[in-house]
Image (cartoon, rainbow, N blue to C red; front, side, top):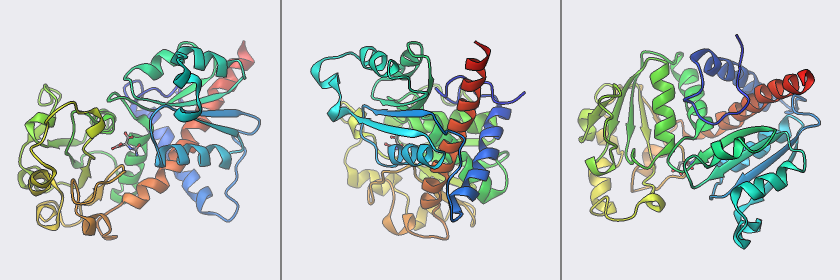
Length: 314
Ligand code: NCD
């Protein structure tokens, strides 16, 4: 069967075997990234453009390193430097870049669906690095790789995703991926930050952290996405921390070997206690960052293989 995609726009489009193929290759790239010479040549001769219309630290750095480790020419385009500020539309900017013959276009955009639209206009492989509250496929894949390596499997685990579910593309992509892999999913958060219809999707919904975390294998915390909120979703950060912030007391309800995850950036003292985030026996937050580079290497490698095959057949 093999990986069949022209783009990586969301987890929605991926079959379980394709997810497995990305993760297997990413395992190889973890080993390469830990070796003395971190270089491969899977993307040699290819041009990768990173277009970030929203702030990013981890994701952009990780895509850049991933491309460089595999030999691509990598260019970063930040929002500040682009002509979008002068009124150019997203599609015009994309068409301009397309004329420079890129092979891989990595795009982050504040509007849900913007990356899908762009993929229809260009003739290279497009990777979604986060579009609005829609999807963030490489984040879900790196989370999956982290879980698989820590727990030894990616199915029949009990996983709690906690906090601002409603505004989170990380939660959405993770729900889709972990659901496809047949895990038990629990969503924990205040009703104001819980999208409707989650129970119908097969998730258990909790308003109470201690109940929601009971006996889970994985605790995934999310940042309050204040930039996507247009009013009072929570009474105050202090009260939010009291009710939903992950501290030792709440974590004690999870399994004794439960791992703690966070996609970053973290707000210590808002959704997570700093000492939990830094506890190397529980927190895998740094591993997630490491897995991010490997997963992006794997995703770009597989897309580049398909791109080359398409071009050779044309
Ligand atoms: C996430 C994002 O941008 O969606 N961050 C990330 O990519 N590591 C989560 C967030 O911003 O809270």
